[in-house]
Length: 251
Image (cartoon, one colour):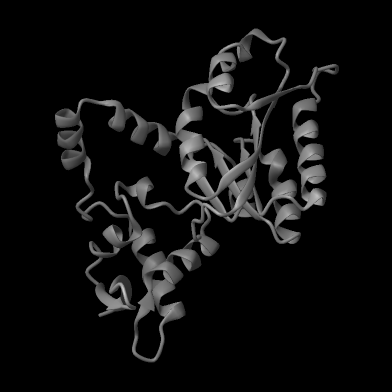
């Protein structure tokens, strides 16, 4: 999936299903895909369990939406988020939605938004049900963002050492990942056998929305590809500014 800071996004957060400690990393990740036009978070703010959100909401300029839990067993918060999402959809003021939750109740919402031609980005924990993940264009795990944020916050020398130690060498790369990427290259290959890296990345995300190189210890897709013996990468320069573009093919 291409990233573009020109996209206008509605960021809707389910406070009951995500940890407040990771909100800064989440907002930074969202900024890679577009500019948040709406930033709302839903919950029953009378509950002591949500008290930790108070400071981070102010710091990130997120608008809290109060939704009382009138009936036991009914999730009024989910309903409020879904209604607001549809209201925003009909205003036509956004290009996409970012739903921050680990709850499968938003599966149908994500599907409906995509049916209307909107990009849907999901952010949630690794326990998120597969149905919700598949309903999104792109799904990002909170645990990966938290890990990156922790490494960035460490002292520079120690941080560099950690990254060198933890950098995946490709030997532990799951076979299913290698097969996914190799098959995707074959899906798109042209007459000369080469595939533009960006096109390949978009194709992989359409097949598997939760795919992210960081899940496997790599920073970028090209880093993974360079550790798959069956694939090769070529750098080509074009245009007035001699811009480098990467292409991939099966050897």
